[in-house]
Image 1 (cartoon, rainbow over the protein chains, first blue to last red):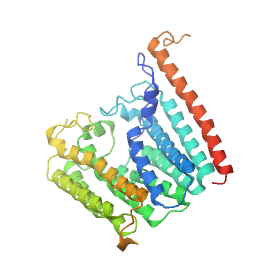
Image 2 (tube, chains in turn yellow, purple):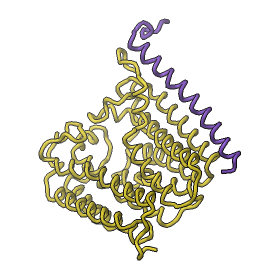
Image 3 (tube, chains in turn cyan, yellow):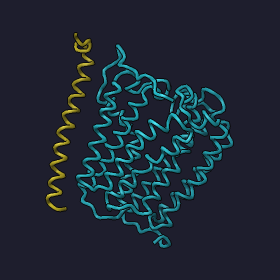
Image 4 (tube, each protein chain N blue to C red):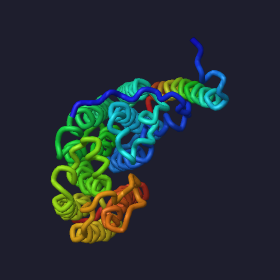
Length: 324
Length: 44
């Protein structure tokens, strides 16, 4: 789908506040990115000056924010068509599209440059690749063209642990790729659960999300398949010298609950009828509660996995013997 | 041509907030570069 004319500043629209500019950076998404990057940085196990570690985290945070601002600027035309996103600063006319893009470019360049100068070239290259992959490959090419948009585009959201790992150690190990794989496989059930009760929005905007193109039943089935792959994959760090006993327990319990919620969703009628979500993230009608529940739990799931890994490494809990 | 937002108190307040944020960002950038330089020079 080609991009429509960007919305101009609306006459009479309230002036943008600093809060609008902060929202351009998608702070909620940013928090998960930062958590996964910090986990990668700490799990690398390499000694690092705490100031430089903080600078690396700052660069990853600003890089994530920059790519989010580029995404918000470019997608302002379709955001204006969707109930969930039409209140954002650019489609609502409080911030000009060009200003959002300029902020995105500035933050992206700043974060990559500081990462290269203060940390190392590998982490800066990986950060630059992540930003370009999200802002260009996903936002400009994949999102409007293919039903596999968030599957392939999910790589951008999955790379922060690798960037953190590279920042700490100057290299990327197999365990860093394992963290990437977990987020990569987690992304489709997370976004498709949301899109099941917001598919009207996506259809109106012409975005080929899975429920729009393949239908709700096919989407529910694919969510279940990805969830069945995700649960054992998330336990794997306990067997590769990365996770300890607490991680094993948390990943087993949370993975089981994830699959249970995915089965409930697969056997429900979520997404079958129109107008289930009203554009809200969590306040949905009864028919879509199974999708809402999986979407909400998927965020907690990733948070639990990475905070447990982080806590184990920070507290010096040794990994399980069979993984060493 | 005059800017209709110039006389609007809400717009002026928002503009002051944005300017303050920009100023703080510039100061933070200078401090960041200074701190990185110190750490690098100390060889840590």
